[in-house]
Image (cartoon, rainbow, N blue to C red; front, side, top):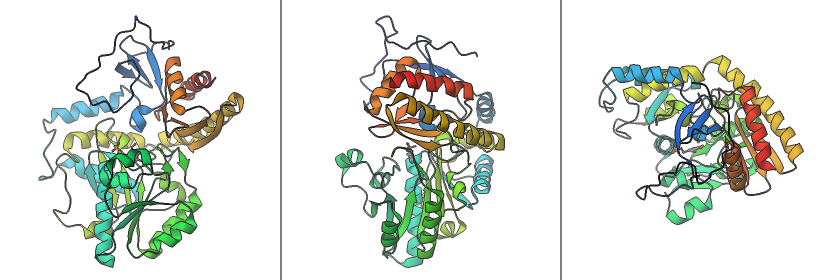
Length: 405
Ligand SMILES: Cc1ncc(COP(=O)(O)O)c(C=O)c1O
């Protein structure tokens, strides 16, 4: 399918009216268009207007839209007739996928679930169980750092540094807190006897696309190892190729105790996973945790295909090299526009601190035919599909420049 030329997406009275359902919980401010199909790095609305997608469905659609390999994997998996079995029985796709994830991450065991927040909740439980076996009942505290986003469930919300998200839902889960990010503070708090785990995003996504320095990560690995505190890397947004590394922590040459992944793992189907060392796994007993859907044969078969594609060294090299180029282009754009305070990022994950509210740039970009999203009030976030070419990225950058004017 060839992409239509991009048209200025101005919404006129002639535009097809959006069907708004009173039955849908209104948690999102959605623009007045309805998406009906996708192809390559573009999505199309009901009037066949094309939008270049630099959000990838918030980091999910790493292989873009209408990917033939993903479609074929789905067809083959569906043909088995075995969409779901529950975890009461063995299935081959889950076993193979776990093996691949373990190999790629240098970890040993894998637990499958259905989303990012669920993966983090699992990781918190596993870390706490391990810590208690090691250090007694008092060792339970999970620490996250300033700027963190780990999800919207009670424990993950307690590990998320966004007062606006947290305040209406207090009390949050106990024994989970956010601390300052600097090494001096961390060294001090990690000395606490109650501390079981430290959770970090190697590139903080929702917190404004902040790349944690490789030296800092190595220090954290040392500090946590010396104190027998589990280091959890939340790679839900920055993992699985987005930074040009299969896992963003590999850039620092470290191996965490637990790693969580989700978003792009199953090509748009909901799936999350917790990867862990054999030490952590050894602390878990049958029945300690569970899920009905996690790791079902259909979703795992599709994920096996996606993982093979995302782990392809050619794709990772493309993301690393094109990502460096993208950063340079964004730096030049920022200097020209005079409306960008800072540019941060790595690979295909970038944030621009803008002078007006980010929502304003997101809206204007949409009108030019470009989808971007925000990461905090003043940061515009770019998460293009990993298969985007330089031409497609250049096209999006000139739309972004127009939107910033
Ligand atoms: C770093 C990080 N962790 C966790 C989550 C939560 O994932 P989900 O929305 O699948 O629950 C997100 C989602 O944006 C994320 O970016």
